[in-house]
Image (cartoon, one colour):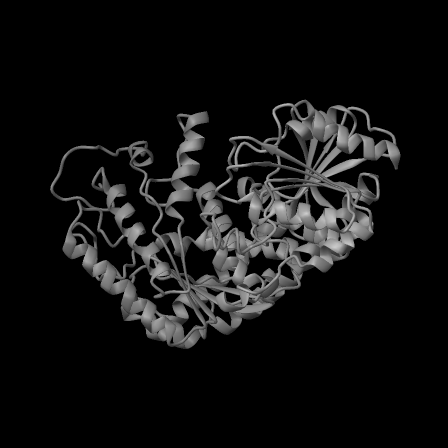
Length: 560
């Protein structure tokens, strides 16, 4: 299975990334959101996003009878588009128009598949990586809310009056797109269909009147879901927070410049390459568009530069409530971070550091914040505690220690894969760690996500792990991700450990992970307590009564 992730999960410094698609890509808000993220948080990167989307376009060459003119087809311009843009990566997003808003037809489906495969194979000849996105969902409920739309039976469905169950057709198209990532046709197949469906379902739970867009084109919130998904899959940047520039772009002057720059370049590139849509963009000659875009970028970076002047300065801070306590969300080096403050800090201002899964099975966390401990978290998901992640983790530690005036040495909570982050960080920065609480911890990637022992494994995460640690299957078989010399560092530093796990965990088998650590730690003279839960699997984490964990941690704090 392929992955776009690189060694140590590094984000490439320079790439020309070309997006080809229909009106959803032509609108390009999801691309502008990604560009905005990098300009705000990592303006030192030189990632070039080239939007070559064309409204109404297909890869199938099909057009519904009611369309005012033959729909543009990618294959009439793809050679010129690739030749002129000289991409490193190509991203294709088609499907919404390819079913031409009709009931399912094998002939139309085959035309879509043939068109996508032809585009993919041509792009592979001219780019390092080829990425396909599923089509987004069609939202008939949003279509019904449009003024003057009538949902009556007809034999002439079109983009104006789509087949009411058209989303079921797009589901089939999306499922097929995902097979391209499994069979090696592309370097990555990215599912935007399911994240959008999930987001809309959640939003309608809270607000039955929620409108996702016009049914075909997602609104800004949908474009952010698309951008967030692409950032995760393409660059291993995991985000949950919605930036202010998504909801109120007009209130963020620098993002207004990002949008202006994006539209300037998109129009310039699209008309430079050429297309058969009769609606032409008002575009500058490409060289002039690029010159103006470069000037705008300088202005944007001048505003956002403060974010990278220091590795340790938290920024864009927002306060909210967490179980009656003040929660502060912020960014450190472009990664989301959280600190929860107690009502009154315990002496020495101690803190626990959740390395993964903030607020999950948090009874020990809550008990400690009630006793005056701070809780901190930095979102470094899917990085598996690689060296690049450890560097980010230490920047985060310094940031919260200095800004929130916390103790120099936290207690790390490592749940599941977070155990790998916690133990690897403690081995690399043992002088900055008080103790470890590990819960059903991953300590050997061959066990999870590799699934090379008794556990079920996770093939997608395993492919990511191999790429991040620069391993092949063969090398991984003998590679010690956490060698005994690292355990020796923990013991020498006097870092005590408490472990909690279920004895029938078939996801992260304790015998392949925690048991080995327990035996080695004891043999080396280290302090370790292991609590086994009889008849319990990987979940639930922690203890129903967390007092043994609390006592272990608080006794350490008192003795320091």
